[in-house]
Length: 220
Ligand code: G16
Ligand code: MG
Image (cartoon, rainbow, N blue to C red; front, side):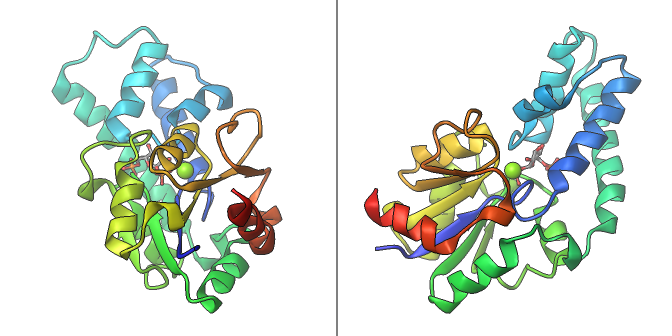
């Protein structure tokens, strides 16, 4: 029996994934590393330091920096990202999300957030959603990032529900893997090709249908 929905933040509830992309792109260009949206897919749901490593590897520059220099590169990206997310208001909640949250609430189901972003609380507060969720699990509470299921399992545990009674919603490949690894039903936001492991995929949040999701969950 369905008891909870657990949402990813960046790219699902709001388009902060775009701000991550812009901030990484600016840093990469400063380092003479070109990267595009296709490569950016590999950074979605991936922690800050791991994302930096992937970018340096892409540019063949992974051996050129000390850990301290890498920390300051990551801090630079985060400062830029911090400036970009200052613009976020409740108007930046993606289409389809507010009605879906209302529907979940009206059924007395629980709501969790599973984001590896250290900025998750700030973004949720700016969206006016911080108090809508029963639990927010971010990078500070977990040891292993996505695709490890830890973040989704922690959210379920804190909500007091079994993973099999949860639906996870994600836009990242590693995020969908984490949901499936946790033994949950996975709803993907993006392309069916990229998110092939999801149980149900919507091209964008505006297409999310509570009735359809629950119907597919019951059939699974
Ligand atoms: C997000 C993004 C990633 C980002 C990560 C860490 O996770 O998808 O692109 O690198 O958080 O963010 P920060 O640098 O703010 O700590 P999620 O899980 O919400 O998709
Ligand atoms: Mg995401």
